[in-house]
Image (tube, rainbow, N blue to C red; front, side):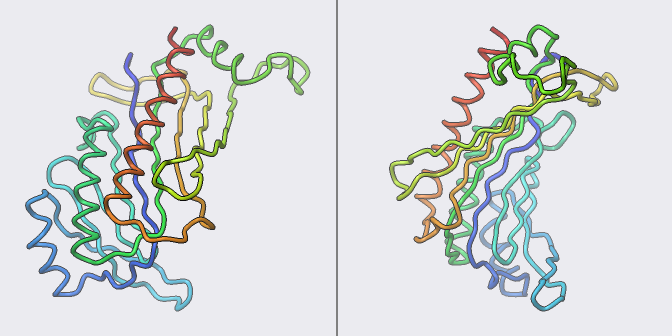
Length: 245
């Protein structure tokens, strides 16, 4: 297993979506509008903490590439898990972004969603790294002179950074949250079970809740997703130069 492993691509949208329920009229709209995009409706359930009841919600499953859409009362998640052997294994992040933009625009149009804020998350295992590569990354992210354990060698470590980022069309800074963790991985593929050590990279771009003061149309959401994709590419390019260079 010499390549990087993509674990998750996800776009999250937040707002009041409680009116989207899988009634007969909604399911008719789903067949009319989403089948051509390769998405079929699927039933979901959500526990309502205020009423202590389980409520019916709407989801979609791609019949082409493993992308899933879950529409809950106050959030919508578009995601896939493109690890080896999954239905989404052939999807690049660019592919996922293109598909997400199309399905989001259609859902907002069909169901008149009022989206207040957005988030974007990816998870990746870098290529397997030897001790020298791991120490190179650790040395740049952690001060090598700081070791409160009295000289013991850490088996696992994690560095989390939160950086404000200005996006031109978003009225206030968004958060770029990056986490880099040394990980012992066990993962299977067609050739069997593999064990290796590498860096688990999580990238989360999100709009703070207190900044959700306007409605995001599909064009603004697409702009946010494209900017988030560019940030993700920058982060991965930089960490690859450290780990592989």
